[in-house]
Amino acid sequence: MTLSTKQKPITILGSTGSIGTQTLDIVTHHPDKFRVVGLAAGRNITLLAEQIRKFQPEIVATSHEDKLPELQNAIADLPNPPKILVGGAVGVAEVARYGDAETVVTGIVGCAGLLPTIAAIEAGKDIALANKETLIAGGPVILPLVAKHGVKLLPADSEHSAIFQCLQGVPEDGLRRIILTASGGAFRDLPAEQLATVTVQDALKHPNWSMGQKITIDSATLMNKGLEVIEAHYLFGLDYEAIDIVIHPQSIIHSLIEVQDTSMLAQLGWPDMRLPLLYALSWPERIYTDWEPLDLVKAGNLTFREPDRAKYPCMELAYAAGKAGGLMPAVLNAANEQAVALFLAEKIDFLGIPRIIAQVCDRFSQENNLNPSLEDILECDRWAREAVLETEKKLSYSIVP
Ligand code: MG
Image 1 (cartoon, rainbow, N blue to C red):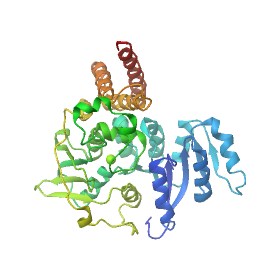
Image 2 (image 1 turned 90 degrees about the vertical axis):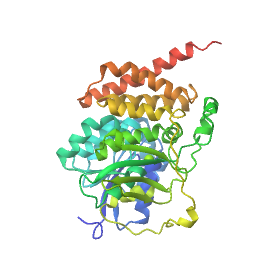
Image 3 (image 1 turned 30 degrees about the horizontal axis):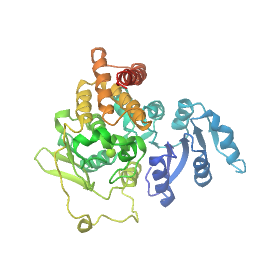
């Protein structure tokens, strides 16, 4: 089916979050190109009800069972209300596999996206991958499933979309190196010794991108870039030695590739998540938009520098976990999610994030399993979260009053 003749049916998981609302903004501006089949969201029932009114999906899930009456109430006057599901990940997975949706946008934060993503793949849907944790934790299970069901994994992460865009027209085996650009996050210009005392509010101030809380903290620790290295390894099949990170404070070049003859290709644009989201939905087509085109003169200088490895230990932790393979990326990811949650709750300080993750990965290293099943992955996800909480308790007991 081509986009130009028909609306493409899509489903959005995490519809009230940053990725979900930006995807629906695309649908609003291109009603002739896209149609919403299903929506899944969490607790923001007011916004979900608005979205149901506007986009008229056939099926909806809220992962919070206690929110069902509120949602039913909010749309009681609709003549054709959607089918509403509850029951946590089970309801979300049902939405993911439902109906004639061709592409499922996975905008759920964290490892919670894993089961619904698998459900969508098994139902033959293409995935617009906006949830990197799914692939990082579940790579050893997801990749064989994608191959088995012949679906496409279309990256919606800006860096991986850039690489994917650069790869169009590059022959197989043409790719030699990937260079992921990083803004450097909230603390890129702060001396390393001041990181110990930064607050949650400081860390939530991202210089360039507007994103959810968890990913904004990940940008400040550079764990986001480390996770993206693992994501790039799984998506594009390069060894970790051939995936580099460069700090590019302006966030205009979204990433680059080097091909066999040393030619380097880049994708540029204003930092706006809608662009990679649109390409994940429209590929291989290009849809005209009225967004402000990039103005190179206005963008001005594009600068690059080496990331400071001592200042950002999360980067090295991610490379190490990626190279260890098997379950280690899942442990790293879960430990990071839990540590970031502790930081957001002001239970640990900023430097506690890499410290705790390192300890948890160390503890796990003897038990790594290079050929894990889905059950193994879910089990080690639970284990790593528990291990973070235990480690945090030990650390807080050891503080001298
Ligand atoms: Mg990114």
